[in-house]
Length: 280
Image 1 (cartoon, rainbow, N blue to C red):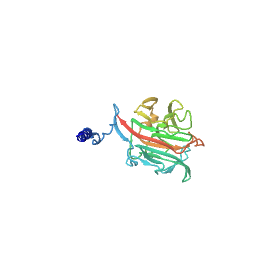
Image 2 (image 1 turned 30 degrees about the vertical axis):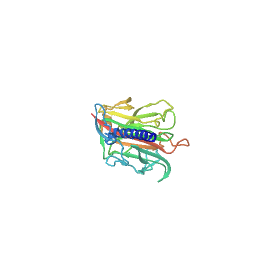
Image 3 (image 1 turned 90 degrees about the vertical axis):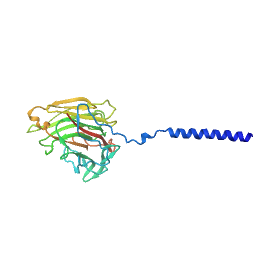
Image 4 (image 1 turned 45 degrees about the horizontal axis):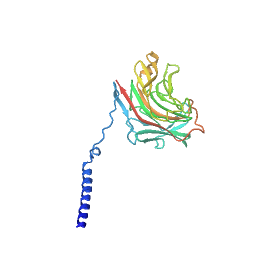
């Protein structure tokens, strides 16, 4: 009799455990795994998205961009621009431009430069990109606009939305915004800059670099804060009121930043999360 009671108790306990386990499993909600996530909507109050690239694919969108394959002959730059994966790659939804110290086609360094000439161009709007910069002596990343069908560096219009020259305090933490135009005899440049408190560097995190461009002015923004503006209404500044295309590049060396040195760490990377062009 005692054995029967013990068996009955054990059976009852097992029944409760089994029943509770089944009940718990049946009540789990797996619906979240069955729903395709909705992409975050890209919006900016008061603006309409004209063109953008989120770099969410593992290849360069050649309907938008053309990669350079050239030893850049201007501004004293020392790199050879290539379209190789070693220099132009993708990582976690970012375009990654990689500067390397290596011998390549007569150059001591390689990097990448891409542009939208002949594919994407326009005039005016709010143009921005979310970028994590490289750092160190000789690094010169840039996000800029340039007039199509012109020969650099003669008669042209250029709007540099973001430039940085690496090399320590006052360099790795400072962003420059500049415009250039020709008056028929020479090239005129106007620009401003802002910085984050050292020892923070622009390579520590992503920042948003932007311009608001109209027929009367260009305003430069760093993380949505305006830090510089110019009046472009004078007649001799028609280049700054003309169509422009987009360029992203990471130069190595040059007359402005100077050459890399023994303190420069390799490789260096410029991460671009997205580029967006808005219109009213």
